[in-house]
Image 1 (cartoon, rainbow over the protein chains, first blue to last red):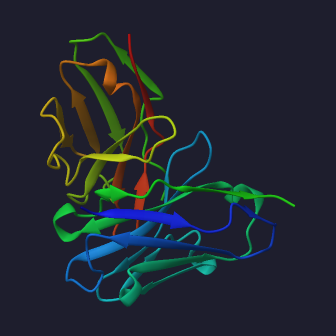
Image 2: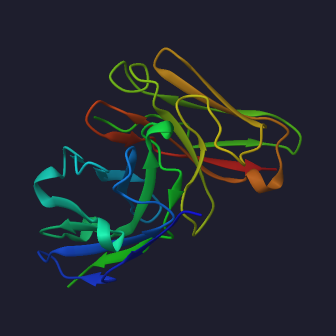
Length: 121
Length: 109
């Protein structure tokens, strides 16, 4: 049974850095084919893909946000870390982490419940 | 890359069929076999319904089917049920990242 759960601050001030953790179970991110990604969804809007880290530590970022994003993994703790710098009120959204695997292509077959991050002074 | 284009809303009665379109370009929907569809209920995380254009994950009813023609993908829900009401999003790989559609609100009348 694969589960994921996001954790981190619910309120961030403009210009601050957001750090979120995705704790997962049911798979190992050192196993070939596995990947974990981050997706956000502003209130009432569509999801937006942010970043992805593969089992072999390969990483992909949204081109429009690449300069502000960092994704990393701690295989021993079954965690993926997500960092977004220079937060702005438009970054207010529910942030999800999701599990992917080779056989599912670019999709996420399991998602965490999400964590709402509000950017406000 | 711009978001994929979906109709804002569709509706149907129980037992009927509906189709949701997702239009992109040859650089995304038409260029890769990596089109996915997600269902989302209020306050919940998206749920994967279709991956790789037309494959269903285990546990997704066969009432859900999908296809692609050129740069447009389509999701069809047959024998509509009340529980199918919600938001539906398509997504596609683009060679460097993934983009989502704007979403379609399905109302079951």
